[in-house]
Image (cartoon, rainbow, N blue to C red; front, side, top):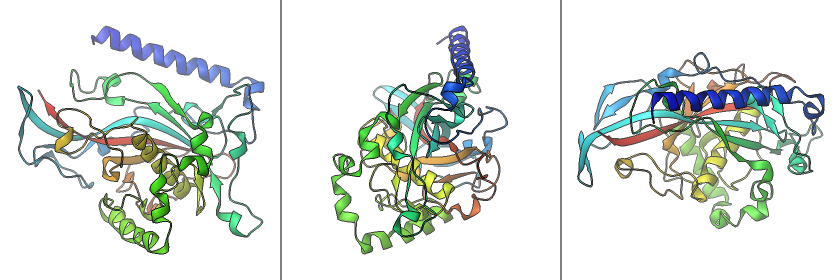
Length: 342
């Protein structure tokens, strides 16, 4: 794609987001559904943890090292895709934005815009931890909006690099219209194995995943665990062990990412299998992703600015939730990519 076409695509995306922002100021839409939506647009310069790009490796050698934990890379620096030789590169790439909110139709990363769909859908899940007590005080229901956000590509930080995710900003998935996301019985269609891990022994194993994810990287073999956040099942937004907004929203986002892999919407990009292209990964490898907070308070520095799935939220919860004006969460999703570059 030429630079003129890329610029035109970026301008169209920016115009669309601006139009949505103007529309969101309409009183009828701002009042749609329960609760007020809060958030702000993500600044692609100041709200991004640019150190999360690293480390960058060629084969097993880190040419741009980093203190952040990294996945295993192919040992050889050269690779072959068919008849095409190349260099085996490994890097982290920001590819998706995600709104995670208990308020239906709340687009946090689009400036806190709240849409009125014109029909009653998605609103029955409007619920948070109860102050009454009992078992329901730890229950919460979350919605996720998934955006294409190939930041490096459309900012042309690295020009003409075929390994980068291409495209422009777009809304890819809205859970309000997905019945599998709101009903745990229907969710069993895509995760029937959940019954195998609904026992104390399987849940106790998640403690080891919590330690591993906090110290370095999560344990992919414990695929039913989301580390310190809880269990991956069911693959929906119904969180029955809510400790706080940060913990519950990160768990909902991890489940949603797993759900996309189970539905073959998201694919694998890491390891030797990813050198020549994406591959099917119905059981998500948690090590492939990092989540960086963008709303209400962007995390751009520190060891846990873009923590892996399951890492303890003790080190990232401070200042992340404000009463009334900062209870809707936004995240930037970083994905590990191994690629046979020209």
